[in-house]
Image 1 (cartoon, rainbow, N blue to C red):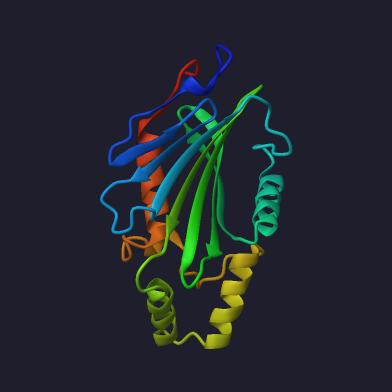
Image 2 (spheres, rainbow, N blue to C red):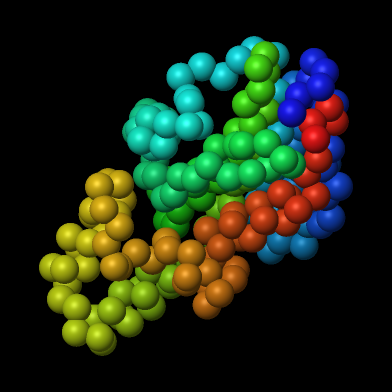
Length: 205
């Protein structure tokens, strides 16, 4: 419940393992410490002093459609969409992925916290570095070994990425994160769980 007009200082994050690299009236940015590549993981908090338009968290079909439009407009692929609890309030949590040059993917997790007259956005970006495609190759080999055909794998992955059905094959599925803890998608999910555990909002209880 909002008990006062929220401002940018309402968000409190007690982050460990992150270094603050920028702060102004509408944006804060952190870089992840102890990464092989100092730009591999970035966290960005932004504040908009206006109501969030076009997204109703009670309309799950509409939420999924809105996120898919965001992904399509940015040339990205939607990985997942959920409505979650964050610091005691409902929030939109989604993950997108995008090809990066010369190889690999960038995974972007976004948490949107809407209030009556403002909203906050937490965006976490993790880049795939080093040898790429290992997660996808190992998961595919596992399904092929179980007797699933290449055609079935292709059709299943396409349905999953287009959001029409969750096929039984998807290297992006969260159950694979344990086997690939250093994969950027696994990091996005793990870092956001850590962030949600320390996130608090003044004026909300």
